[in-house]
Image 1 (tube, helix red, strand yellow):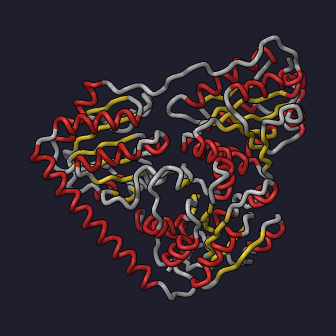
Image 2: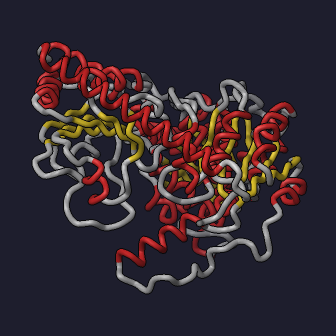
Image 3: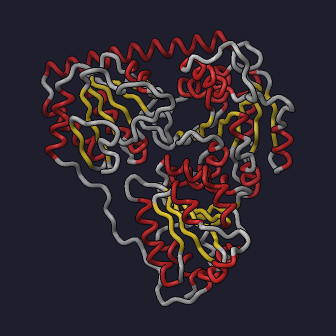
Length: 554
């Protein structure tokens, strides 16, 4: 077999059936091989970052290992930001790039470079296949490493001559790998005792909860404890139903603010996440003084990595939550159960109060022009068909989105990790490929959308019926908020303007851009027209862009 055949057969042996890519000359062996492997679908993107971002969301939405095909050094460089997003999201991905003929290594060929070194900082493993005999074992190892907890991207460089070499080393499958260990019973009891001994425990849920299909187990534990449940500030999945009475929202982005949110808390159980991702420095720990810390994690690497755990355990997240819930049930006294019920009742009252406050916020901003963020979210929600998936890069509208929509199970909501913008439009491609039978809406800020606007062409090219809603406030609003925070934190000059953060000169023509890439568009300037525009866009069964003129920073 030739190296390229071993490559394709190895992908199939590991269950891959889709490649996201942007081809070039050194990818000719792979592209030519697609003619012989018609069961392998190739999703074409016009930019490597779009292909990689789509693959990352596809991996999250399917639980499968995503395959990416990039073009030599510049193409890999274009994709580094999206690979970083996949690393932060723990997306299992095999990122490949064609490389120049190794026989020209000393000639500094056009587009040549040390590709593994470019990829190494943003991947779990980075390697070049030096001869065809290495193809099968490298790919087997790449799939393994990409999926070992915490999952993440692996990079493999594929020199054009190696892809054409003959080898007797055939493709290798993954074997039977069981990566979901049951937690140590003694550790489970220790965590349960810790939680039962405290008067006000809270839980912080990471994306591993959603990925493990453990949301209902987390709900049961939270209700048994009468515990608040927080989610990470940036998250890829629905890890706890946002309408549940115990749901408190997302943790802030600095230790002092987290500590304030946990005021009065005497125990924190962290489940399946990096904890905590900070934007701004603040001294001290994110926990109140005297607060006990427990940690459930599938990865040895993450367990108690940033903070000392009074009780920490390794294990499958779903099995771990179930075991802790059972231990709490065994150890809870009647008095404790009564206290937990009273805590749940108080949280129910708080949730009802917050829902009423959001309804009042919507009412007070209903007639604003341009459209308020609160009304925009309500109108979009009302226009969605049943079973719609939301791909979220709404940035400063995210709080209103979270208070407006009902995300009860994993698969209802996807967003990006890592903080890099431009993930929404690209991610919607991978989400729709992963869920071809469900409606997908992508809600993105206008500034964010410009990082991956080429995704519209891919949606049209592959007939992906995504509705892209662009919230156009003609500014980098989040940067204005962050500049205000910077000025306050560092005692810098205040009452100044916001240099280079406005996008109105000239205004971005989203409908024109969409039309130029084969996607129909609708401009909405009145709130009363938005829900209807969303309904009509989905009824078209085609990709469609809706530009919504919304309010800027007030």
